[in-house]
Amino acid sequence: MEQTHTYGDTPYHPRWLRRRVSTYWWLWKPAYLRFILREGSCMFVGWFTVYLLLLLAALLEGPLAYELFLAWSATPAVLIVNVVTLGFVVFHAITFFQAAPQAMVVRLGRARVAPQTVLLGHYAGWVVVSAVVAFFLLGA
Image (cartoon, rainbow, N blue to C red; front, side):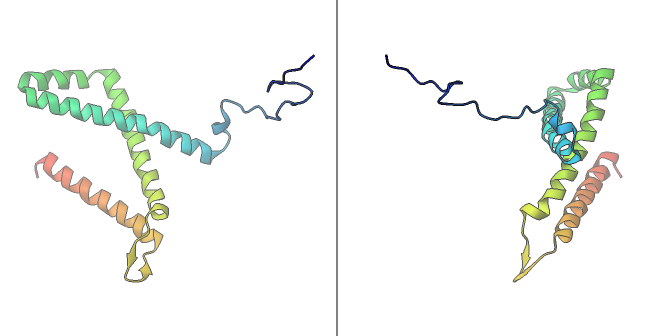
């Protein structure tokens, strides 16, 4: 009688040793938690993009559509989502800037620019762009 071999539990193929991992493995180490939060923050960055596109569409449709968009934006649910989104977008930007010195090697001539200088350059750029946007939005 011929015996067929399967890849299940047989005397010829023992079970693999696999430790059970909790679904919440990422909660136990701060580095893992930051990683998961950064990955999840992409959803909020996406929402921010959609929100800006909706704003642009309302602006292009005219004053009535813009007023309706503002009324919708003032609802508590949208306000809460946008406040949470602001926090996650800032977190996403900060963690992106912290990763930049490892991912980007900048050279001046033959010398490598210090990672701290690259990091500070990103933050300086962020401040300058924020100041320019604030200048135009506040109508100074």
